[in-house]
Length: 89
Figure 1 (cartoon, rainbow, N blue to C red):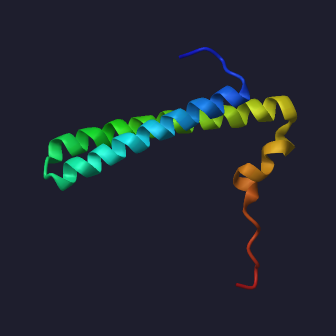
Figure 2: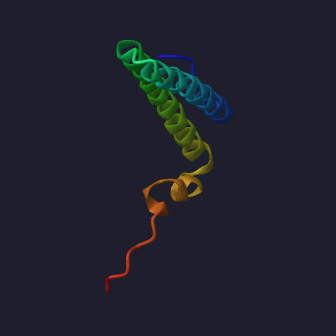
């Protein structure tokens, strides 16, 4: 796929992809307002691809952090963050 990054580099890559996704979403909205639905859908699809890349980089950043600082360091950023529900509900 690509070169292995350090944690901060994964975060920077994720942020860049989220920004690109936002730009494409804005373009999609503009095209939809202009009733150019084909181009709007195309821009939305590109945005979805950038969002997927951003998510992959974010997950790699989490994995990098867990590998270097232990699973406990990322425990509250995952499914363990949710508090258990009261059994009385």
